[in-house]
Image (cartoon, rainbow, N blue to C red):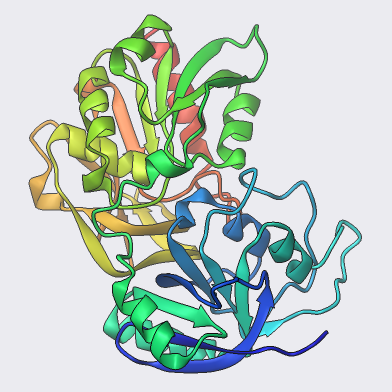
Length: 363
């Protein structure tokens, strides 16, 4: 394969040299908010997670692509991330499930990547300076710098309405004991699969679906999915959730957690460099149990802004941020992390059963 020299330039001028892989953009430039993910495996699931819309994913694990890609591990029908940064891209695959290598996967989905980057230095810089826009490609350094500085990042961006489904669709058995309407703010395939396996028929609806439309479907529960962007910008969804709270049992994950907390009256803020990875320790406060969790978010809930009647259920043991909220009177709860863990540990999968029990109690 021909080597194509490329550069990654951050908005503050920090520059890294590497080689272009995947799709070759016509402009020679790929721009987006640069974040890092610490997971050791699961790169295909991470790249295909819609929550990365608008972002360039840096993998801290040095060898990416070792076991190839296959049609079964995608978390959406196509990646929504802007690009991928790796230290060493594997050129050959080593797993019997692989149908192609990561470079071919990126090219098929028109996603660009850059390899040969000192991802350790890049990650340390992002930890110190914070997540920021960047640009990579074959264009001149000055053009890359301009693209990085003019990229808006995710602040103030309602990206949920960019990645959501255009039309409702249903998954699960028609005779399932529970019927749930799931808002698609960027829903992952693993979430839909695990809800279905738990005994739920799921109707996935667009992010803009009104509360009246949801209630007209007479669901047993409402699920608020993960998704990309700034939760404070998803104002339509927040208003709809406000009208649904107390009307039907509710469970939210990630962006869905932030939207539910915002609907309760709380405020959100942007983390310095976000939580992205599969090894974040979270304490379940009522039991004292520590769960190792999969996370992917740039925003969190201000604990001091939660209204009375709301209960903090989980805390992040790394930085003390809120990881779970419940409003018992309104039959609603949410978590910041990913219990479906695609990829990641399975410590928190009990939350899907908690949702089932909540619907059973109120049936």
